[in-house]
View 1 (cartoon, helix red, strand yellow):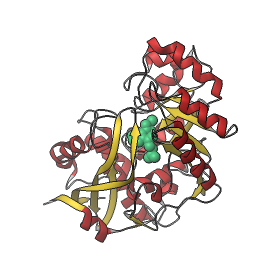
View 2 (tube, helix red, strand yellow; view 1 turned 90 degrees about the horizontal axis):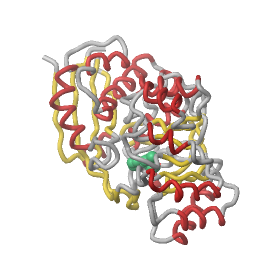
View 3 (cartoon, helix red, strand yellow; view 1 turned 90 degrees about the vertical axis):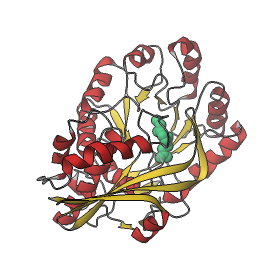
Length: 370
Ligand code: OSB
Ligand code: MG
């Protein structure tokens, strides 16, 4: 594949409802899209970073800067045998996995189209449908939260995750668990607690939670291992897992019984596959996380979720939960049993709505090979 052109775009997309977590409220996503043209074929990737650096250190703006200043010059005009090989060209740039993932993933879309293979199959997927859960942001009161959960349970979602932070945890978890004694329920703290709060965290054990996601610091694995020994509920790591080695460390140290795999956070499809393999080998559960993606990131998430290591329902849910109009056609829909069919058409498997993207684009820049 010869990389002939790269177009970087910034779009502003308003969420249907603001999403609140311990890191703050997200009302709009600054969707940075990468459109790569190789051998005359166009592929799409999305930067999954939050608008500000509130999840990890990456933001939409840092990713755009890294892509423009450091990644594009390494790849425009270059040839790679396959999409996975592009990481070799980008490895001189440290970190910034979400920036790198957008480029690698666009190349996987191209490779799928060139080989007439669906992206899911190309990356090693084996399932025809994926199991879906939802991540529900913090709400005005436990009562409002219970009604939100009811809507999603009735829609068929197989696992419910609620966001928590100190002061907005026990009442919410108790209300949801009382209303729904049997559902698969998990919580995500996005680093809202410290080890001083162990006694408080122990109180979550009574609610039969599937897991507690990232209770401690965003960049920590070690102290999670200490915490894990004091809790009955399994811990799931999200923020600090950047690659397969991190997953290995987390598992060997006993910091995680479950791993949330996010394509952007690990730098793209090839590393996500490795993380998935580590989980499978070690019989540790994994599932596909979400970053409030547009349809483009969502389509990539559906493809990875079809790999065998994704053993629990993920956070990949229907387009209409986030957007009035999504960037792909058809939009992502979830069946009454809480599943999404894995597309079988070559590449992403959805039509990218370029006219809509053009309409929503605030800024765009193109670099061409000479
Ligand atoms: O921690 O999983 C997270 C959204 C933005 C940033 C981080 C997270 C989330 C979610 C929502 O939980 C997942 C989704 O619905 O896309
Ligand atoms: Mg999380």
